[in-house]
Amino acid sequence: MTAVVTRRGGPEKSRPSAFWPLAVIVIPLTGLLAKIEIEGGEHLPAEGPYVLAPNHYSELDPIIIAVATWRLGRAPRFMAKESLFRVPVLGWVLRATGMVPVARASSASSAKQTIAQAEELVRLGRGVIVYPEGSLTRDPDLWPMRGKTGAVRLALAGSIPVIPVATWGVQQILPRYGKLRLWPLRRRVRVLLGPPTDLSAFAGTAQSAAATDAVMADISGLLGRLRDAEPPAQRWNPSDHGQKETGRLES
Image (tube, rainbow, N blue to C red; front, side):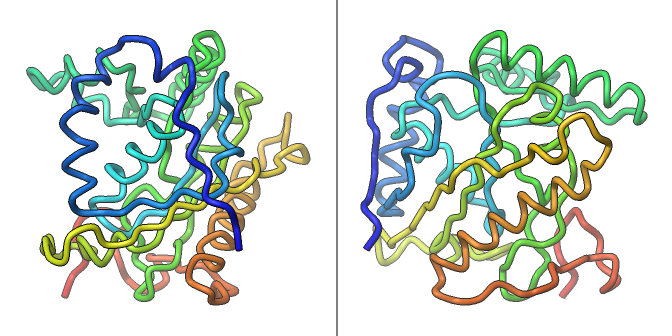
């Protein structure tokens, strides 16, 4: 049986920051809904930059991952759409907590932005949480679908480790595009982190799609362990099924 690891210390968590008032509110509320069990926490670096890459199958996933990351001693920073930074109050919160803006841009300017973001993460020793799928999985059985290249491009640009992570159980609290289930309280949610994905073969190359597939394979393998099931040999591709990759699924 894998030991449950919850590293509660860490320099980021011990320093006063804008995360503290948020944590005081969010963590107790989340604790009423979910009993979060973390395994493999030793794979998240105690210091320095990282890219945390989780699976995504519930709108509640980011809260669960944020709480787990905080419990492991790191500040949960996400990549967020640049437009959100212009929203009153919300924009201030995003900037104060060091979230990373993502702009809709051409490939050339996007590449330039990725390099700048990677350099900033390395300089500040911060981590960022990136959902490689880009939106909730379209796979009918909630397995990870085809990933996007943003996470690995960011990691390769700054030689930053990509930590794959899988969660399971969140769908019992908030099903994909469903309604929140408040009862019973404290449903079991498991979070399993794996060792950094080996991307050494892709360093200095333009093979971001292949590198992304390696990350998605690791995430799928971790989820298979949590579900005690074998992941599909082929990841779900929304375009092959006439689906949009963003927005709600059509009934």
